[in-house]
Structures are given as C-alpha cells and as structure tokens.
Image (cartoon, rainbow, N blue to C red; front, side, top):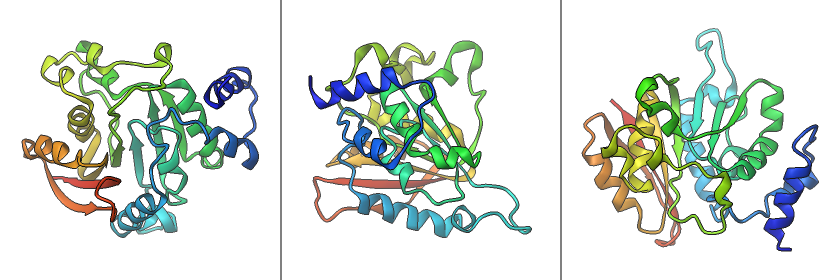
Length: 238
C-alpha cells in the first residue's frame, strides 16, 4: 500500500469525530495527489504579504472604521497549503473537487473554523453555472485559484468535472488554465482581486485568457527565481 493509499484509508475511517493535531496534519500533508503539493512557501508568503497591503484588516482584525471581515474564496484549495499561511483574521471559504484534499484542507484550517472564519465544501465553482442557478453566487474580496493541469494520481470517483456541469459550452470547453480564472472573476466584488497560481510557463496561457476580459487588469505578478517553478498573477476586478 502506497503512502497516498494509506492516507485515503485513514481519511475514510476518520471522517466522523476527527480531531486534527499537529502530528496527524503533518501526516495528511504528505499526500501528493492534491494539486498544491509542490507549491513553494516563499511564493505563498509573498502573495499574502502583498494582499495584506490591500486588505490590512485581514491581518490586524476588524475595527470600528472597518467592521467587516475580508472574505476569501479558494476555488480549488488542494491540501490547503495556500490557506495554511493566510492572515489570521481572513474569512475563508474553500471549494475542492476531491474529498480527500478537502478533508486535508479542513484539518489545516480547523483553528480558523473554530473561530467561525472557515467553511469547506466538496464542490466545483461550475455548480453555480447550471441552467437554473446561473450566477447566484456569493461575492468575495479575494479569490484564489490554482487550475490543475493533470489528474495524475487522483481518485476518479471523487472528482467533479466542470466540463459536464457548466451550462455555457463556450466556458465548459475551456481547459482548466482558462476556465477557473475566467469563471473565478464572477465571484469577486467590484474592486476585488483574483490570484491565479500557475506553474512553469503556464502564466502566458492565463494572461492571454484574461486579456480578453475587459473586467480585470493585471496589478501584480509574483515570480520565483526559477522560471519553471510557480508564480501568482493578481488581477483586480474593475
């Protein structure tokens, strides 16, 4: 039995009454089938450092002058690596199309959930674009999306395929690198930002896709020294 298989078995037998600890979270995070497994901490930290300049109360907490929590949606949170380093007072909603990755994200964010600042769901943003529910979605200040490029080592029965859900065939036929950024913009308040986490040279694909969208402008690009590593493109909704 591989390590990933052991973790899946652990999750299946601990779905009810599970109490996350530092030890078992560390074990769960050795799971390699979530799309954020190789995401570098420095890229995550630099992204949050920039976002807190835009939304300082996400770090400092709400005040009488700014009484509302900053709201963030991660459209495909993987094993929660990005959210694990999020500002303490950020109000997070997490979507995941994989029940195992969702369980790991929930475990990572357990302390935040205890403070009513986290909710996790096994679902796809495509669920909001079926014929009778089009656009009936909550809005957020920050949207994070890390489009997958491979389904290697996934558990097929736990995947949701946006291509079969989204009623708009123009969107449904897009590859993940275009679909999630373009649909993710629909979850932003005006003036909000979407952070697109991209690996290697995939940033060019995302840039071309969002250049077609007059609603957004690129305001920040966070890069690694290694051109083949991850980067984050940050767009503002106009």
